Image (tube, rainbow, N blue to C red; front, side, top):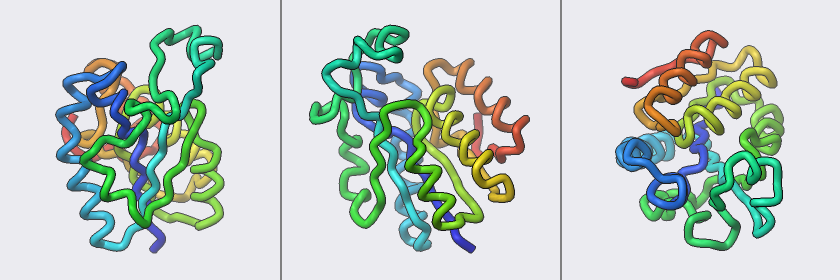
Length: 175
C-alpha cells in the first residue's frame, strides 16, 4: 500500500512568529513524533511550505490578511527547528496559496492509497489540501490527525475538522 504523510506549513511564522499561536506551539511535539514514526515505517513524507515574496501585501491574500508572513528567505519562512533534521530525504514543496497543485500532481502520479495530513492551519491550508486531495484521489483514504493540527482559533479548528468529516475525510486524534 502506498502511504503518504503530508506535513502542512510547519513554519516558524505559523508557530511562534508573525501568525503564531499557543495552539500551534502545543502541537509541535506531536508533529515531530508523527514524522519520525512515518519515516521509521518508510512512509513517504512531503512538507509543504507557504511561500510568499516581498510583494505579499499587494497580493489578494495580502490585502485580505495584511500581515507579512512566510516571506521566502526570511527566518519565519523556514520549517521550525524541530523539523529541520527530519526533512532530509523528503520532498519539500513550496506553495504560493492555500492548496498545493504540486502536492496534488505528486499524489496522483504516485498513486497514494492512504494520505494523512498534519500541520497548520487546520482551517485554511490543511482543509484546502485535504479537500483537493480527496477530489483528485476519491478512492484514497484521506485522514487528518487533529492532535497534530491547530487552527487560527480553537473554534475554526473544530469547524474545519467537522467540515472535512462531512466530506468523508477521516479525523483521528483528539480535538
